[in-house]
Length: 601
Image (cartoon, rainbow, N blue to C red; front, side):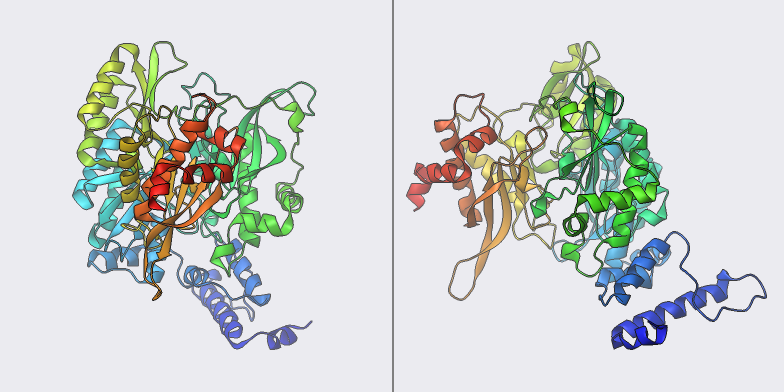
């Protein structure tokens, strides 16, 4: 088909888009793309440079009849990195960003969270979740100087600081650089903070220390602009096979350390298994591809996987723009074939029969005192209900790390952190000093497994006040279920983005607006799921109740826990194991027979 015939098939909007693209390329060639004295070409050149892979994907989308979503148009109009100095100058005047500039600021880690808060939130990249004590204390000082006097540990083992006024946005980012940190690419359509095993290098059970791998991938991302501006956000995680899981199965790409046995088509030893397509908010966990890699090959393979996604991800519908949907449409075999074509070689495959089973994890190894592989040393996990710390607590915790441990603070995907390198003789002192700060290291009951996203107090997408309701649920359960003798994971997330990964909790609550009148009035509430799992028992939970009012959520959790305690086969049977044995529906029916719910009925 001739170019003229193809043009006749485009609608008016598509024609304007392509004309604008051609004009932009021509302008670029006139102002810098041509050698001195050379005449401009009559046709636009093939896109070049680090953004070319994205521009080509956008052009193909339009040629195929698609309409780019707003975010894709914003990227084309002004790349967020190219627009940084303009964003900085406008913010310095105290000006709130326009929607398209709010999107661009997220490339620099800043999220404008109005109307819930008329300020920025900054999400900070922390590879493998590990900070030095002086960085931790420095972040507290930055929060005091430029934001609210608190921070939150995120479910990607990072930190975020809120209430940053526009004029403080760039000074805050400059302060991160002084601390050896960055927020670059922590939001928008980019590869988010890379997670790894929190106890990497100190866990006697682990097969591999993930710290070098996460740091290497972190730097790989930061130094390649072509890996920014994906069709949608992207998550990568490394699990070392230790006792404390990294939740890599909830990521787009998961690398799992495994022991390959004799008889496999590759040499026996420690390899990385590749799993793909995790996105728990869309009810999918990453699936085993059968591919195994040498640890040093992870970056190259992840890069190729992402480039296939860049070229083929949906740039028209944000709800279908994650890699999962390319996998769903193509199937794993076609996707992996495209990856192998980019790599120029076939990847090694090993049948699961030749892989040693993953050793059991400890669901609450992120809380309490645990012996390290180094004799005489321990890691100590601190409970942070819903991940919040004041800046005074942060400075106090940094002093404990420096004076009683190895000086590091390791954040986890459970919205808490661990001290590492604590000598046996210092454990009691750590416990006392943590208690004096208003926190605890005790792994018991509900608070140690409580996870909540930002919620409606700080996120416009959230339907409910997840952090506030989580604390109310914890208070209620501690009063009404005093015999709860094992930790239970309760995850509250405010919307379908599932930042708190409600589908993998023992009990998961996802925010919902509950209709309470014929006129359509609504109140905050939740849909409730049970039976989720991870690591050696990965599972998406099952919904058992819809549209529960927030005020009724504590009694529902109470009833579920009492039903579990009454019917379990001893304390050794976990909530997830009990739910799997009896079935989610049977648990729901048993809960509805509990006094807390019968009275309400």
